[in-house]
Every structure is written in structure tokens, then in C-alpha cells.
Image (cartoon, rainbow, N blue to C red; front, side, top):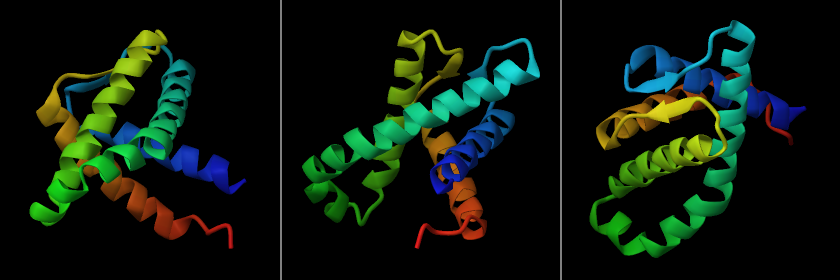
Length: 124
């Protein structure tokens, strides 16, 4: 149940990003398809953050330390761009226009997810 709540929280965070940034788009014609797409993108984003992100963080550890953690913003933006690319390969109508949009979008998604995680109970 916690897993489903976290996926839904990520979908809501993606929805907030699509509402605030014109460069992040979901191209569907009905509300059900729109939210279904957001849930699928949230699953893709979660898989990427679980599998790819730790590897990238490990490889970029020195740069992260040298930039006092600011390089993590670049990594998060890259994960959002990778999500957009994978969604395109799977014919999921989700697109992020460029790096700057991905950077701002990843900040929005992180903040909204963090705020929602304060409300969602832990599995402990």
C-alpha cells in the first residue's frame, strides 16, 4: 500500500511540474488517459531513480563533493530527461523540452514529493 501511495505522490508531483512548466507536456485528450500517463511516467521515473541514479551518483561522487552537492541537481535533471526519452521509446505521451526545463522540473518534483512524503506514512 505504501508503494502505491508513493507512486501516486510522484504522479501528483509530475502533474504539478506539468502545470507550472510549459516545457513538460503530457499529450492526451482525456482526463483518465492523462492521469494514467502520469502514473506510468511516475513508475518509469521511480525505476530510473532506483536503478540508474545510484550508479551515476557513485561515479560522480567526486564532482558532487567538489560542488557541495549542487551536481545532484544536474543528476536529477538528467534522470528526468532519461525518463522523457524512455517514455518516448515506449510511446508514452510525456515529453521534457530541454535541460533547463528538466532542471527546474526536477526541483519542483523533488519539493512536491518531499512535501507529500511528510503526509504519507512510512512503512515502519
